[in-house]
Length: 242
Length: 242
DNA sequence: ATAGTATTTATACGATCGTCTAAATCGCTG
DNA sequence: CAGCGATTTAGACGATCGTATAAATACTAT
Image 1 (cartoon, each protein chain N blue to C red):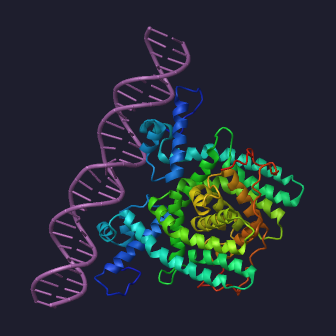
Image 2 (image 1 turned 90 degrees about the vertical axis):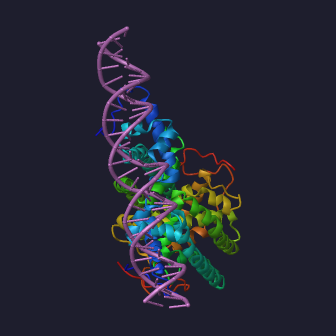
Image 3 (image 1 turned 120 degrees about the vertical axis):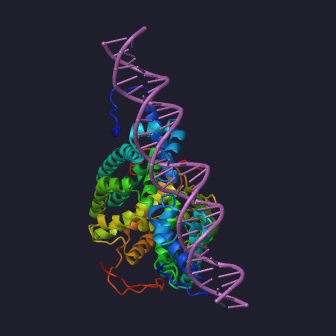
């Protein structure tokens, strides 16, 4: 069955360039339009390659997606680990919290040097695959990203020991959602702010997310006891448990 | 044709039941798997209907999606308007801010009475369409939701006049992203919290998002002047403008 | 009950999907 | 230069896609 992934060792032919062009094109197209909506032929056309060469290099469409994840996950999470290590050495607790948050966010935009600009593109792709419920992506996330997220949450927990872990998980989840959405729907920020903000300005987005997330993390935990009063919004306020 | 939802109207034929069954099935499938990945035949099978009847009732696949939006948008945004009006009448400024935020969030989970449980499902669908860059959805969002979002941001601006509008747009954007992601990836919260939190508990999710968002909105604005010092995280800190 | 309309059904169409095969071409090595 | 493995190419396969059509059926109104 054409094996799966070839062994890129003796550096043969123009293989490297075609392979990289396919990966780049697929990443861009998947991130912009979703997995199912993009055909093998679309990718081949964008990469200037033959549809058959995609099967040759990656075996299948799933194999191509898997390889896209492979080339990004390791550098991104390694960078996150480095920055988290640096953050934990920050003396001032206030600055340390921000540094931890920043260590989680920044590599999602700028992952590694050799894939210039690819960090944000790959993160956008992750957002789209997550929304589509892609099975390949789901498996990789559980295998690879949960570990990094746990390390991040542990660091937050040491920093904010008065908050339950569940609270930190929720807020990390919101942070990731905000980050994803900022990459998926960039035009809306520009439009709603009437040009006052630029939704495609990654540097600005990072600063805004950091500021908002740090404030969110520092908020007191939600009181989970039943019978809270609210502003009369929810029609069904049963406070169900487990 | 044992459809679930009744529609006691002038009751022409079994039209109402089939039509509603198709809408329900399509909404569920689109929200779970994306637009392109779900075929007309999938929907027909799930709805217990004939593929041809979808063309008959909705003209095309795009027409079906459009109708899904149509039946949800008006009730959801009307409810948001009502709750925003109530929120603005809250005396205490602290509670008023929370009420405003709640007015934006709650209808996304519980939109209207006659579409029980459909609010969260439709919001999840919006999240997925947004991620996929669906053109039908994009047009509807710009036409319908921007107005509601502007009203929401205006209310926030009156409440927090010291913050630039751009800051409020960013944070509203993050709020929406968090909300979307909490509906798209519910299992991850449960998994990362090791069962301490339930990602599918909408009531809990609302309280967590409200708490986190209110805190985020109250944070001071990001200093947009160039040359800020940071904790040494970002490799490229150029603070580019426009 | 019968006529007429609304809806559902079976079926077919052309297009496009992911994948496979075999031949052509490339780039290196002996 | 000849040979050979690596890569690219053109083409075809069956499956499935969205949609249209015409016949069959269900319902309403007279």
